[in-house]
Length: 165
Image (cartoon, rainbow, N blue to C red):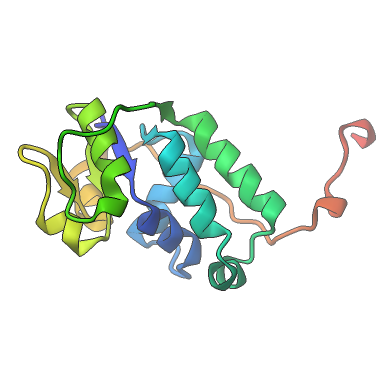
């Protein structure tokens, strides 16, 4: 069985931006979207995902419209395990990551997956924090992954309506 994961925003963004379809970040984001990775979300983490994806410089790179970003986040929320954690008793190395520490504390066996060196170097006592590559090294055999077909982007006006099918 896979452990519950908390996927830091930097991993999500890297998974959307990389051109390497075999990248650990792509693998994790695809698994989140398809629902094969058990992961936790909270209002604060979804808000951070949304704010970061909407940054103009990042929007130019990932090329998702505001509507596509909303659809993507809706898929993530639908596939997640939702938590509304209390503030953590842990003090994170970066106060901006307090929401991640709160999620970790809300689920004793949860694992944080991040590329943030500060968080990797200073985990809460007794908690596991992995890079995306480390996580896959440990858990890929347990992660049943269906292939995700990446289609060329289509404009919403090109999508068929239910009535036309």
